[in-house]
Picture (tube, rainbow, N blue to C red):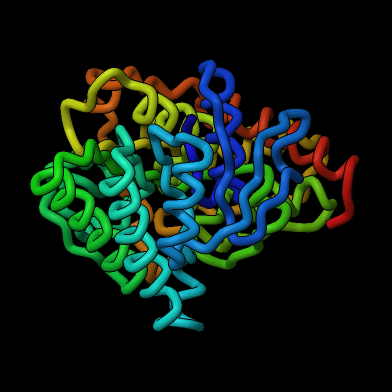
Length: 325
């Protein structure tokens, strides 16, 4: 049995689907469990808070959990509003997951890290025009409190691997786009530019950016991220502890604009030329090196931006047909 904390969320629901497709038995542990994003799949939903070690242990025992995919966390915007709570959830909650795994002999824990643990930028070669991919061994330099907590949580996992032989791995996502995130998780950050663009197109609203059509970024589809998480959870062994999950390519925003216009004919999108579509947030332009994941756990991204955008917009329309935004 694989327990997915945060399994009712955007990434979590896709991970659950990927694990089920791989033949795994899966249960969701979430503070507000629901199956809205999981249809037509049915899994056991457990209401619980990762800050509650006892509930975690009871759930692991009752379900005979042998692997945990740990995705439950508060996002960066939550930290700005509730820093103390975010600390207790993102760091303290991860410690509880690791401790429950140690006490109950769970075979493996895979957690979601973040690309924002990397420096801004690691070196000039990681920017335009070369966009040299950033590997997992790049020395960390978390750029905000959210990234610092995620990096610290990884360090706890590495400690548990060394000290207690808990088989631990962390996956660092690039900026992902997803139908649920585009429709329901409305943010104004630069990393959500493609999500915001797709939502505007599907909802018949205009989308404007003064500049940035020539800027490359690592646009990775959530379904590829989910496949990478499932691969890390199901692999016979993990040769490394940290894996990047990105698209494997530098894609200009112009290509994403063209894909959205193709998927939604008549979409009112205007993005000016040049670089830097998110001034002040330049760190989002780094490209993750996915070589380690490919070689060690078989992570091969299937979606370029055109295929991913078309699939994402189809999924957005399917969700809209079942609900109201």
